[in-house]
Image (tube, rainbow, N blue to C red; front, side, top):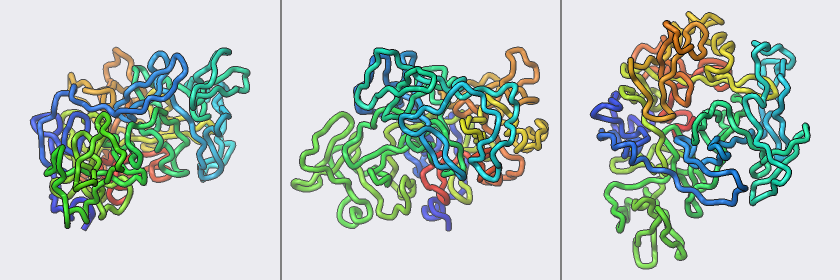
Length: 478
């Protein structure tokens, strides 16, 4: 019996999103947590809670923006998110930037670096006549001659003689994909601080950088598909109980042996969204947004959602991700729960990072489509459309957030369509990238296309849109 579905007796089902009913685990304006299958009407978008952060010293010209997926992020004077490119061990060698050493320049690289076996170094990269340099996609955040370090903000030298801002000694960049303040389209998967996921299988991606989350000592926040998940500093999930009140815990004795109360120190003081409740004389328990907090002793892995299968218990999010488009559903599968279209077909996202030393992304329609077309149709765009159809948007549909949008795609090339293109497809996009279904999935809950491509779909291929990946990861992370 698979964990997270059979244990709580849930049957396979599809819940309508955006109509009268919503799946409780979806984020963005949807109040209940993952695992609670009760359907509820979606509150107005203005009720979306935003993650609080710790104010840190910043040089003039920088600020903090609230992003929909990564929480608070640093931004330049125009509101563009700041990214770092952390040094990462690949399958054969290293990529990214060591602290204090910028490695992104205006040279157009022409050959593979041999960092992701089985591809050797020295192979010619595709579409060299159109290939951009690293700095064309990732503009260095330059510092003038008067710039001085402030807190963790420092200035590093570039080999061309210019000076570049760095945070915690990691050089800072902005992405050409970001258009509005708070956009994080340039980052790998939308996460923050978890950009190294996938080991040597995925490219050395850029990740947004921001201030620390405003949580007491002993707590942390992790980016997942459903939102910014509250955890302990050892990455174990934090839970709340529906029978509790803002002043009293209802979990004692046998209950408290399974659900461990998170005890606050004697010196703890209420601040912002954090408070305490008295369990007994002299013993206080942490509460967040007026909900007493616990860990689940039966959680088998960090960032788990398993405890939310128990009636009345749910994970705690400091900020939820925006809800999917109307009509999208949630489906149980052999390994967890996935996002699906209105007919229950699993939704897939496409991952791509080239094997140059720059590790440039190739998963966006504004970038080369050579990798995707080669992988999904042997270079034939028509076969790609047959094997991996885009998720089409209904006429007149618009995205309710920047995370989910409608994009017009040229079906012959995979690039954005021109404004007057007659055969353009209107498709749903997640993080400004089209989403797909797989032709070999024949019924709701099928995930036959998951991990299709190179290195389990991490380098060049498709991954299911996991809401819960109970078999491989547990937390719905990207």
